[in-house]
Length: 354
Ligand code: ATP
Image 1 (cartoon, rainbow, N blue to C red):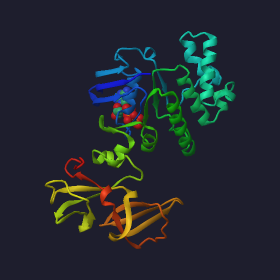
Image 2: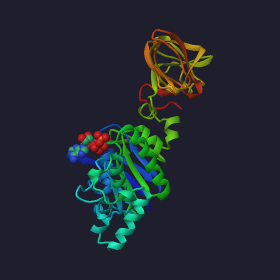
Image 3: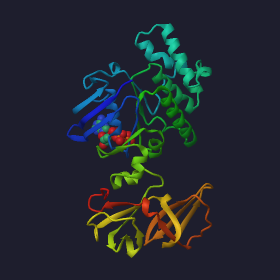
Image 4: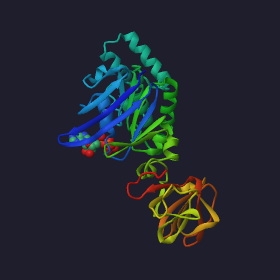
């Protein structure tokens, strides 16, 4: 096992710079998820870690060793891809043992490695099958088996669950997390799915347009997003944003669209009248007599909760309630954000205001 250090890494394709100086410390045994919208550069960064892409500038170290010029096969990493890349003409056992064979391992050593990985992943009964005889989830487990059989210093995952249906994705998410809890191998996992990031990561790195917007534990990012981008990206359904002005007129409050008055616990220093964006997560609304009047647009009951789209100050917001509500479109309700849990962002640059 090993730590990984990514220091001021840049990447250009021709004249086009796609990573603008990215620094990410990764501790030994940590499960780090790189998350961000399509095109933010997360796969490129993972490919650079794997050695499949040159580093334009900066350094990447695995353990004590700078690996910028180290060949992929010399890096002691194992990568699991989105499409699994299994060999169709080989059995599960041969697929899993292939990388050991390539490295010149003896048959007995290969058999032991495959047996151990198969036991960890509950693949023992499937060792003689071919990939075409497996379900999507089983293929995914074989791809992971192929990675763990070598006992590498670092696992790299590139959107490994995106080809699976929703239910299987949730199950595999838990399997990968459990596997990591068992093996404690340093892991870097790329996804565009913030729920995967939230549920699996020790540390999430939110990327956007070739930079790191914020890194921290899932709950740090959820509780104190550094800017509006992170606030909108982490959490589902996404945080509501309402533009307006901070008011400190006796007690602090926020004057939202069309003068709607929204509660604040306190206002940042010298912010009276400042244009700002008020952020409230759907799950942080309550229905209260002193809430702001809103008009119901659509109600979506999921059984466990009720998701409500409503117009607040003329803007559409989404609210999620744990309890059941029998609202109808057009009903008026009073929505109150929990003042202790709302966020304020500077309207000029999107940064969190203290
Ligand atoms: P996705 O989730 O869609 O895979 P991503 O965040 O992983 O997106 P990358 O695949 O790393 O993004 O791509 C980052 C940027 O680099 C994109 O603008 C992409 O078009 C560009 N890019 C990637 N590979 C190359 C290449 N070989 N040549 C030129 N540009 C490339």
